[in-house]
Image (tube, rainbow, N blue to C red; front, side):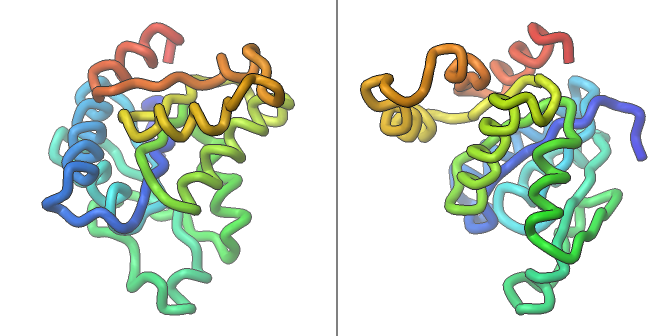
Length: 183
């Protein structure tokens, strides 16, 4: 295990290497590694692979947190090749809790149901104090529309809960936010 600060990176398994989301994830992984962070992802394809590949290219340490369920059910053939370390769980629940609770910070890239579940679980656990306070950053313009829908007219989500997460638009902004928060 690495002694570097570990940043959890949430993202989709769907983006292909020629997509803008894949390129953004690669740039994020590379920027995090260059800044001295290890990264922890879900360990599979798409933006998880891209962030891992970018981190490896910059000499970083990559932790993949996988789940037996995906491989046994045929959803995945195995972890991506850029993981230095694999932590494997039997259930998705265990995997999610590890990804959400163990990092020194969390960053979410655009994604689907799995990514959204990671985002809302992280946010909820931060809100109630079940996990320690840490930087939580949503990367990309995609999140602006999502969060506008979530916030709505402000009836249900208080400003203090909104302040638990930030939106950044570039990997450099992510690094600046992490440093601002002392991570």
